[in-house]
Every structure is written in structure tokens, then in C-alpha cells.
Image (tube, rainbow, N blue to C red):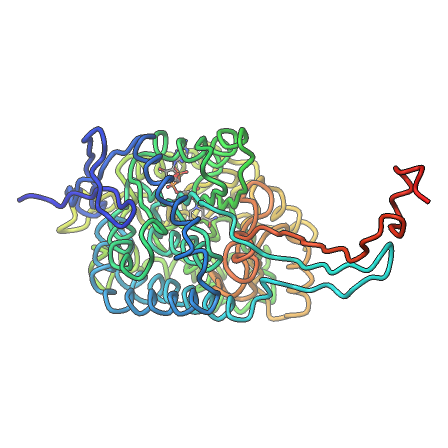
Length: 504
Ligand code: NAD
């Protein structure tokens, strides 16, 4: 049976890769090739950047008011909603995310970011008049917020369409044009979405160039015609990309890795915490940047909490992601699955104990997928590999503590700072702890509490800048100040005598 070919989408047209090269897109649940995706190169990228530049300069796009763009964002939301079923299917079959997550979480986020950005730009002060100041002379000064230009958007495979739309929508809400590079592992939904909304936008505003990171991604970093990069992916690649882009000093938003700590206080509601901790780590089988991967639990409640977590973990359904009954789907690839098992083995070697899970699981009908049991490791020290490195799998590392001081120190003892959580019934105390944690998001008595109207991003090596909310819009705006002077006579200019000594 032939499989679809996924090309580039440039200047409103489907464009084949200039070298004619393709690679397979694999369904991680079944191991089947579901599409062939174009392997682009720097020439293909250049073609897309030129289209994006000319669309950026075209009054047809530059002349649109925020109100026009708000209408457009609502139309995009509607188009995505109408085609949700197709997009969800593409997303599940390329990423291995469960259908229940993608249909009830990702799609909502995508529609929501369109609506939130539409409302935001209707009221956003793109032009601000400063009050006049009499000295050194009366001037009129305005602060203008302008689009940056051509934005290169690179994203990861784990929540492919949602992560990409969290970039595309604010970028175009601000009036930029974009060149998108989806992950080569999961390009299907992004490319299809671009095609579905293409007629709503002038040609060249939204372009997709497919290919691998080392080729198209790196070329985005080096391209002098790209003004801003927004990247979601690993910290390692983020650092490389920044080095590549340093030459042209591009603006950056970086959404990188995490090793987020959940602190469980002795007064936590155990039933809620056990459910919430598992939700925090097992969503998408642990393949989420802000997963609660380190459980810091007070020794008074450790046994009770772990007993309940083990009972609940045994009830999670590992299976075909297309089945609504499935809680946890596959690892993104066999190699990634092996890497996760390697981390579990390292914990054993370093003296920790696997108290639950730890093994590969066979799923009927998905024999070529790589599925891993929900895994809980106790007796972890914060200097062990499983406490320091991002595992990106269904693995919870449990570290016990005695005092709040110790818990805060452990939580902050990480090169990452994406998210954290506090489980406690004393909300005042929980807030005090939250204030001391070095992380971009701190959740009290829940996990994954992302809102499209609130900024999300990381401290330390988890990123630079923020997505979503006002900060997410401003990440795609430049600031210009225009000042007009009204004094016509040079003799009346207060500061000119500093230079013009002969001025009377
Ligand atoms: P990755 O860094 O391997 O790849 C991310 C993207 O970068 C892909 O599109 C890839 O093709 C591209 N890329 C690879 N090499 C490149 C290069 N040299 N130059 C430019 N681009 C290059 O990450 P991944 O495996 O796709 O995703 C998992 C990682 O993403 C995890 O570390 C996870 O924590 C992180 N992530 C972060 C967030 C967040 O919001 N902070 C969200 C999701 C995922």
C-alpha cells in the first residue's frame, strides 16, 4: 500500500524537496511507516525565507490591523475545530500520544490559544503615547510595538501540533511571518494544519520546511534572513542552535528540558496527591517537558503515599494510543525506549530500588511498539543520574526529606527550572514554598496546570523567555520609540550648547 508523501509548504504551494530526498515517518505504536516526509536542505529553507520576507513586507499583510488579525485567528480556530478528527488521528498515529489526551487536551489548547491571542491583540497597546515632559524641551514620544519580521519556529515531537501552534498563533497575532520546521518524527499534523488554514492567510505568511534538525534546523539558526527563533526541544540542541544563531544575534525564545520536583508535605491529602503525582509523571508516558519526575516526599508520609501510588499505577492502562481506554502509549521510538530502560538500570546500579514497574511491556496489536510500565524508583539520591538527567519516560524518582529547608534545597539543586509542585493542605505554607522554588511554573495541589493566558517557560537551563499570555505575544514584538521635537530654533535647544559653543 502506498503511503502519503509530505512535502514542504511554501508561499501557499506544496513544494517538493530540491534534492528529492524523503524519509519514513513511523507510527511509534506499531512500527509501521505511515508517511514519507521530505528531507529539505538550506536551499529549500532559503526559498521559504524569501517567501516569508516578501509576505512580511507586503501591505496585504503589513496593512492588517490587530482587529483584522483577531478575526483571522478566530477563523483559524474554527477551521481547526472543523477538521479536528483528521488532525487528532494524524497526531496519534505519528506521535503515539493517546487519543484521549490529544482530543481532550491538545485540541483545546490549540483552539484556546487562537481565541486568547485574538482577544489580547484587540486590546493590546501596540501604540502608547507618553505624557509630555517639559525638559529639556517639549516632545511628543510614542512607544510602538512592531512585529519582528520572519520567525523560524522549530519544535519537538511530543505534543507536535499544540507546541507548534503555541508559536505560530502569537507570531502571526503580532504580525510576523513564519517558517516552521516540525520535528521530522511528527510532521503530519503540522503540515496538514498549514494546508487547512492556508487560504485564510496571504501566501507566504505561513511556510513549512520539513527535514532533519542538523540540516533544516541548523540552517534556520544560520540564516541571515530570519530575525527571531522560537525553539522547543532539548537543552543540548537549544545551546547548539544559539551558538549557530549568534552570528546574526537573533531574538530567541527557548522552551527546553526539565527535571521538575513535586514536594509532598506531611499534611498533604494522600488520595489527591497519589492521583496527582501519577498524572504529573505518567501523562504521555512521561514524555512531557514539565513532567513531575522527582518526587520529594516527607518521610512521615512516604510509606503511605508510595503504597497508594503503587496501587494506582497498577491500574493505568498501557495500550494502543488509538484506544480511548488507554492511559499510556508507547515511547517515541525503540531507541528512546532502550534509553529509558538504561536509566532504570542505572538507578539499580547506583543503589536505588525499583518498587514498581521497570520493564518493557508487550501490547497485543502493537508488537513493534516500545511500551514501558509505570516505574517508581525509591531510595534515590539527588546526585544519581535518574535525579539529574531528563529521562523522558514513565519513571518517577523518589527522594525522601525531613525538613522544608531540605526539600527546597533539593528542588532547586538542578540545572533545570521548568516546573515544580507543592502538595499540602496548608495553602499559605505551600505558597511560601512556591516562592522559594526556582522554576517558571509552580503548581499547588495539581500538575500540568498550564493556561494559555499565563506565561510558561523555564528558569536556568530550561529556557529563555516565555510562551502564552501577554509575555508570549510580546516575545514576537520589537519596541520602537518615536520622539518628535517641536522647538525649531537651534538657539532655544537646551542641550545644543554642549556641542555648539558659538550658539548665542
Ligand atoms: P530535540 O532537541 O532533539 O529536537 C527538537 C527540534 O529541534 C526538532 O524539530 C529537531 O529536528 C530540531 N533539531 C535537532 N537538531 C537541531 C539543530 N542542530 N539545530 C536546529 N534544530 C535542531 O528534542 P525532541 O527530542 O524533539 O523533544 C524532546 C525535548 O524537548 C525534551 O528535552 C523536552 O523537555 C523538550 N520539550 C520542551 C518543552 C518546553 O515547553 N519547555 C516542550 C516539549 C518538549
